[in-house]
Amino acid sequence: MNKNITITGDHVRLRPLNQEDMILKVKWYNDRSVRKTLVVDEVFQLEKTVQWFQRLSDNETRADFLVETLDGMPMGITGLINIDTQNRTAECYCVIGEKKYWGKGLGTEIHSVLFQWAFEVLDVFKIWALIRTNNPAIFRVVEKLGFQIEGTLRKQAVVEGQRIDLHSIGLLAEEFLPAHVHFEVR
Image (cartoon, rainbow, N blue to C red; front, side):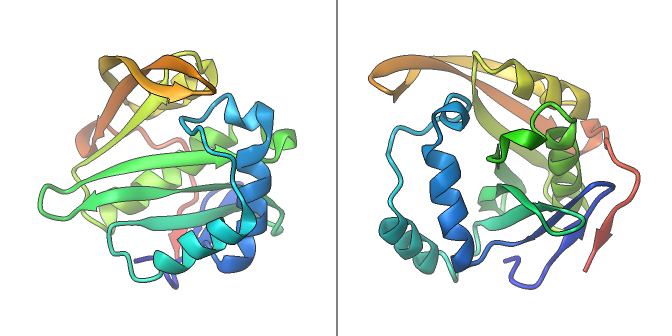
C-alpha cells in the first residue's frame, strides 16, 4: 500500500520499510528495554522476519514504514495494520528502537504525521490500538493527539510469562490534534 510513499514531518521521515530494514527490526524488537513497551512475546529471528516481510509485499491491509531523522538516521518502525477500507478503520503501531531518540517528543510527531496521512490520504475514520497499561510514555503521546481510552482488556495478553492488561484506545478523525507543522507526502 505504501510502496513509493515517503511522509516527512518537522523532524522525522517515514519511508517504506524494505527487506534490508529487517536487521534493525530484529535488533530493536529483541532489545529488553524496547520490549517493555511492546505487546509481543516472541524472540525475533532474522530469517523468519525476512520471510514475514516477503509475505507482506502484496498485503493491502498494512502500511509499514521505517522512521528516520531528516538526515537519514534510522530510529524506529511505525505503520498501520488491519486497515479496513469498508469500515474506514486501522490499527496503529510504533516502535522507537534507538534509545537516544527516546524522550524527545519524536513519538508524538511520528504518530502525528502517520495519522494525518491516514486521515487525509487513506480516508480513515478511526485509528485504534491496544497498548500496555504500564507505559506512561505512550499515554503522553496518545493524549496529545486526541486519543480516548475506550476500555481496559483485563489480563488480555501473555508477555514474558505474565498476563497483562491492555488499554483499547481510539482516535476519530474529528478528534485528531496534529503535533507537527511541516507535512509532506511524496
